[in-house]
Length: 476
Image 1 (cartoon, rainbow, N blue to C red):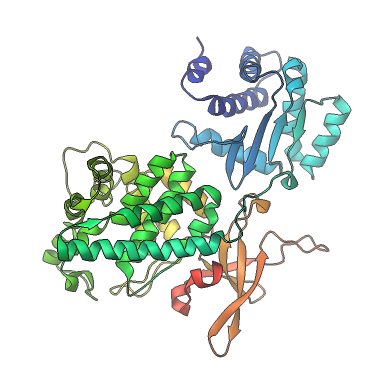
Image 2 (image 1 turned 90 degrees about the vertical axis):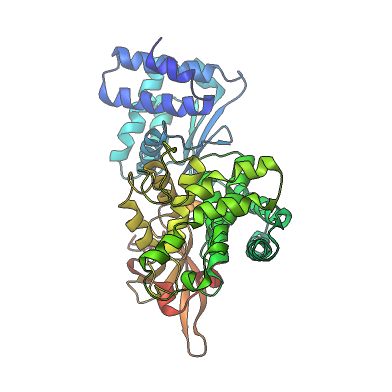
């Protein structure tokens, strides 16, 4: 049994397909047509497609930096991340948004498949790869594959009121966390029914339109930091969990972990939490107790034993780094759990981008992301952090940009039209009364029809908090 055959017994069909496609491209790129590795890769690729019903086709689509195979979103797994990123780059360089293999592919000869793959590889050298490829497919008579263009993809925007509903859910979640914290502090117990409903609603938003949920994560509240921070961690964790293909049940558990990861701060004296200056050694020790305190407080929740047992570990771990440094210091953990590693990333990101009483100047979103990437492999799980960075984009939503034409604008999202490369921005206009007001929504992928140059180029990122700007007020 070959290594590839062994892997096909390990991964689901969709993941095997992507792995097989990658190996076929690599083999043809490196070796001659009659090489045994090429023949083996061809055999395995055809064998995979032959397992599909004879009347069915196979669509490989790329939307917002994700692969969709036969309608199923391909999850990020540790064993496949390198392959997925390589294939995303491969398609991006050819301005392709996917391939559609028709049932007739099963009858294609090895020579035809090799010809197609070599044309696909060669197309990057052409000025307009998709158009050149279409012409070559017609010339060679290859009619069992269709190139997917940008216009063939349709974004999922089924609910026109989704943003409004999502925003209501966000603030209801803030109120729910606040209520739970206060009841735990005064009564020693609290129900979680409302919090669970809010998380379930957030999961619905994540599955329908991830960009809306990421936009909610830009909400910052200086006065109510502890509660908005908890909801932001839940929001960003849900998005990251969705990116790596967690099930709905796991997403709900992850979201609840995010809401209650800092519940233990009810035990920390308020004067320490809100201290404007640096903490002394004794105060820092008090702060370091809050993950264990969160476990204690979660045990007081009026919830099933099963739920509580599933949401204890990640809040306990959210300050333990990937290399097991951080706090609390433990000897029984050999590796931080998946949900704990996710919480650590989103907790640090939101903390860095939020104004605090002891740190009025914050990182801009892109600066925070750049700073965190320096800790990949030590502070953070390098694979999860890379997925998080891809999800947020070069300039994460909420980043304030200054352009070469003097305009400023806030990044809202990365539309599918740009293939996830260039963001959409809401321009901000100077207003004598209110400082700034919302202007037009523009796409940074837009080009001048005469010169072919981008209409706007970002010169630098600015910190929205320095300008008194609440990003969510403008982008949601």
